[in-house]
Length: 478
Image (cartoon, rainbow, N blue to C red; front, side, top):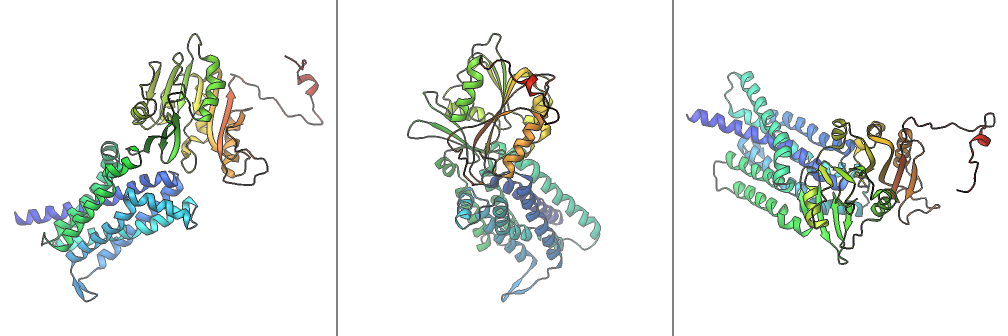
């Protein structure tokens, strides 16, 4: 019986370690989104900062032998405990909501403004060493197994380690982040790290055990609901950090991943670009009979079309918590009966419907680093175009350079025009300065396109073939 308990304990340690490493990787990706975005470039750096140290950890752990280190004899058990305590201490700073916010505010102040550089610095400081130390767990634990049937034991260890990784991938994202929130999922990691120390320690009242429990308690404090409420955070799920608050002028603001998304007040005032789009695209059809079908991609605070009680709106957004937050904190009332919410990924929604719309408004780009890469491609815009009725209107809101002064702005413009010929472009606000050479000045940029089936895009005038005398308007006045 004692032998069975010993083996079960060892496999439990391996499963927990596998969970922690995978969950740490996913939590790092999710928690950095408000600061560095969610692009494949930043994600690849974080994944690399986990995989390579993990490999080196496996290699070093397999070679470690008990010996004196700084005058103290370190056994396999002590090495395991020490590794976990060091990893916990570093992750406490690198994974906690309180200190992550401070860290990413501090980086630009010391001249590190590039988001890839920020990702590299974060990963180097807070992920590499902890993962390297935790990666030593499986080969170190293997020393406690009988040397007989080594291949069989190795296979079992790899199996249970993979089971832990599987749970870290599935349980942390699909269950925990969406129910208890990202911040409490982080705290759970530290509770599990403390459990590892307790399981490995012969003396359950040792300094190591007390220290591991202290770190877990500090993690609870640094990721507490009270701390998030101080920043007006209403939800911190697997998709977004959502904050909502009221300014002194009674404007209610919604922030998603640290970007302003919506504004509303009792006078029905909204963000300037929303009011512009409503004025030119919605007001003329406010009383349409039959009602028009309007698709809004990127729900935000559901302020777009909120006053329109006639037309039929479908809001699509991957974040299912937005509707409840918008109704409680932004609109202060439920969305109208003529409106419905589809909490789905946009491209999945479009793939699974043949419905066409009179107006499609794409407002899913928060600006800064928060640009969904899969929603700026030619294929995506072609997918959207296929859902436009004849004579329908497409509108997009993007945060771009008003004067095309960076590659992102130029390439977005090129991509849109490749799908929507003769699209119009409108700069909202007062940020358009023709002689400004800044590559970072950005403004809300509205693209509008009026769709026609079998549209003739025309041709180009040349000196050799010039038909302008046929094409130009015959009347100069309406």
